[in-house]
Image (cartoon, rainbow, N blue to C red; front, side, top):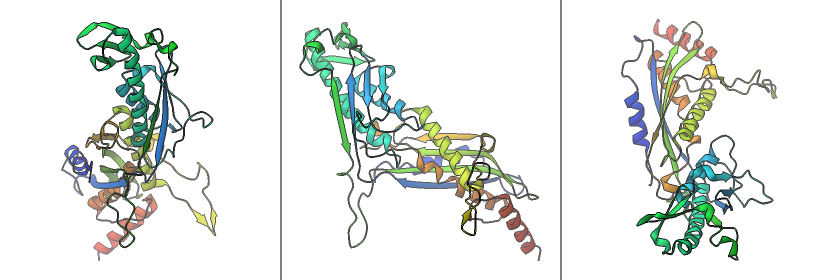
Length: 357
């Protein structure tokens, strides 16, 4: 199996957690780990166009819904093409003009769209160097390109800006503007399950791994669990954008806290009785404790520069880690989510009554 950073995640979390805990400290600590599959067979396609002023436009139907996808794709395109990342604009989806994309789900965008973006950027790079070698009177392999500047490897003083390529031959080419296409599919990577066993040697393009440790305090008079700190580590393959990775981990933890402590659909006689934000309790900023996000790099050989998905696996360990911390602190084992104050209060009362008999 490729890119399995679970041990690294557990080590990071354990190293960041103090050892003292339990009944005499008033603080409970718990750990949990999780893994999740990436996408099944799917494909991604993008177009990268070099504009006359040296900027570029990446056309994609993948959706940035706040997860930072545009920044990540711009960085991948810049790294592969040699353009300045600030000069690359990533489009909004518009299926009248943007190419086909399977879907922005299953934590697949960095892996799949990142790969198609890298392919398109490599093609743009090849076309730029083909033109530049005529202008600088050398072979394409003699050239370097970085941050929108092209120069001769052995003579750095012989250089041009990418924006000068238009003057040097783009306008006279039959194929204008410079355009790169990238198409990536996971279909050939994934092995269908065997009919006799239901097993597959590779059921998904990649796996995600994460571990979390939490510190809690419990009020025995009310049953309220107070989260003091969450330490969360995830194997991301390769970090493309550190800030975006940390934001994804923090957002996953916040969602996990909601499922663990407050979020619950309530029905009476088949009717949903908490259908709005005033009655369906999601965590607010004041409900989220300090979060320590950590990334573990175990590069995936099929990912763009080793990167893979980040988002979803971080939701899973939060609730079991809180439940484990509750058990470690009070001896009460609870698995019925959410762990509301009422449930915890009666569980504590029941345990106290049992132990005093």
